[in-house]
Image 1 (tube, rainbow, N blue to C red):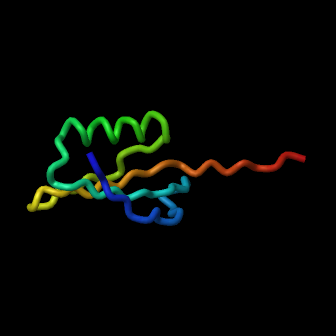
Image 2 (cartoon, rainbow, N blue to C red):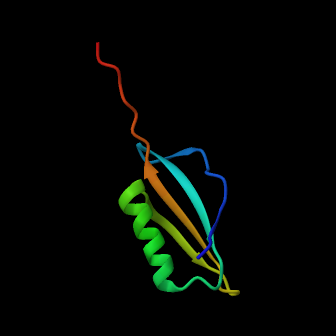
Length: 76
């Protein structure tokens, strides 16, 4: 299974929380099970969550994942 990855978008604000976005493009021959496993691995190990899934008429999928950006504040 191959998937192409677009460049990560910069951080954006969604409410008071800052998120990092990542766009994946899955080809039409990717099965539903393979796509599910890929997204589950990103969620479990990379702490990504599904923000949007879009399926096009030609069968390709554009997946947008997001994760919170954790800013560490200095304590003095």
